[in-house]
Every structure is written in structure tokens, then in C-alpha cells.
Image (tube, rainbow, N blue to C red):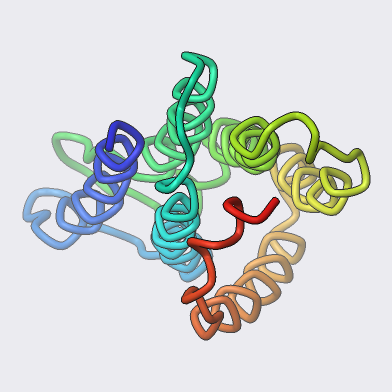
Length: 187
């Protein structure tokens, strides 16, 4: 439940960010399809993460560390949501592409930490007996992509990753989640 509340805060920040942009009367908004696209990716990341947390519900929580590993990854994706959602200046212009590029390190380093910590959390929640470096290594490419996005200002790199993430996110929406409950029970 605690992690669900944290995820809800992040979802609310993404939607509130859209609302701030849409309500703006004194500020001219220059929208960016890369910025908007990644806010949508983050929205679906929250949904996927929350549905993935459902698999934890049959587990007996015996250690405070298990609860911490439910909450800590959530905090990093919320930080990414706050970083990608701009506050409006009092007047003038907000260039969303410029904003996104200026916040790219906070956005992507937070998201990369989320990816790695959420995978580590799966291992902690299921028990250390299920830990395998190979299992964790499959998510290192995502963390590496996050690092690259955090350091590069090349728009074509961000656009390429957005297209790839959009395809992966679309495919993820058709993932059967009916077996999630059994994922940890039978490990």
C-alpha cells in the first residue's frame, strides 16, 4: 500500500504537469514531442510498475528491508516524474524541448536508478535465493540507455530512444498479467 501511494504521487505529478501546461494563460508554451512522449512513457512505466507490484501481495513480509525495497524504487521514478514536469514561469515563454534537455540528468539518472533498484527489489522480495547476476544483467542495458540519455544533448538519440521505448511500451500493454500472483509464490 505504501508503494502504491508513492506511485500515485508520481502519476499525479505527470498529469498535473500536463494540466499546468494546458492551463497556462500568461506563458507561451512551445511544446516538444520528445518531452510529451517521454511523459507518456513515464505514465505507462508507473502503471507497469504498479501492476508488477501486485505479484508481491501474497508474500509474507518478515523484514523491514522488504518494505524499504517496495518504497525505494518508487521514490526514484517519482523524482523522475517531478524532474520531467515543468513549473511555469510567471510570464514569458516555456520551451519544453529546452526544459527537457536542461533536466535530462535528473530525469534519466533517477529513472535509471529506478530500473536497477526495482529489479533488485524483485530479488529481495522473492528472497536472496532467487538472486542471480544474470537476471539483474538483463536490465543493465536499460540503465545504460538512461545514462546515455542523461549525458547527451543529441536530439536524435533522445528521439530514437523515444521511438524504441514507445514500441516496447505498446507491447507491454498487451502483456498478460493474470499470472503475476503466482510469480513469487512458486519461486
